[in-house]
Length: 373
Image 1 (tube, rainbow, N blue to C red):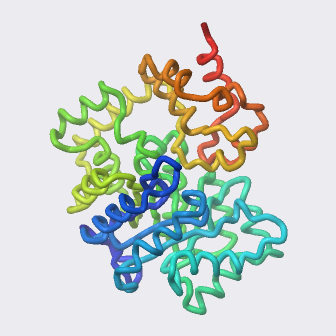
Image 2 (cartoon, rainbow, N blue to C red):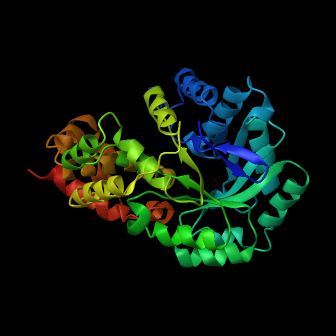
């Protein structure tokens, strides 16, 4: 495992994200399989473990606290986030923080973030009457937070405004070679770099979408470097950026963590020739019509129809990528009340989407495909 200095700490360049852990038939975390992933990561040098209050419907923090308790507390760094996007009137932020400590079976967090700063949530975090920033800086002074930062799915302009609002120790953004231009991640990265904020990367393979591109794009990459996974190209692209502190991967299988640990066993950024090959593969990938969903599932929590929106978007993407049976399989496998035609276009889902996807429009498009004769 390779490491990079962060103040007085040496952080593994690969961090373990805990939003996409393996689940059982009921949708709950499969604790045995998830534990094996945590163990492999820890035993192979990963020392940064990231979770959040609402990951896995609130189960992720509790799982991670249990999974890590067999290891010395000073041998890893624990990170979680404050759920400002779900803060309701009457909720006590201090009580939520105490609950997080209890869930994670710890007396402190090494890193703590204001979660998902965007155009809808920034006003909550910047509301002087709530005093969220002051609360967590006080907890930092008391030794219960090591470093305070924020995660963001925000425009560069909002990022500039937010970093000017208060000082932070680091920031976390969605960064990968597709979003470098698609989501203006290049400018986001530059804003943070200009403000001397180390960047923690989330969605390096875009929820798995960059782990396999299209057949033609995949062939380009595998012929250029036989034996390397498609996902490894995304990680090695990030190694080119000097202000990237670490890269979080939401690993959901032992095979994924083994491959990622191998990729981060040495500092091996793409060289210029490989960079050019990746750009060619990206152009082939862009020729396909797809919806840029990362399956974060924020939308699902807000859907009054209880639709599994990421699953439905995946059906449309599979159809767009040429999987001829994707729509017919969805017709056969989904109950009538699970169909996209049940979308009432209320827009609650879209307001929570970090990718700014027009979800009602996507549901309408898929609904038309599924009901076509």
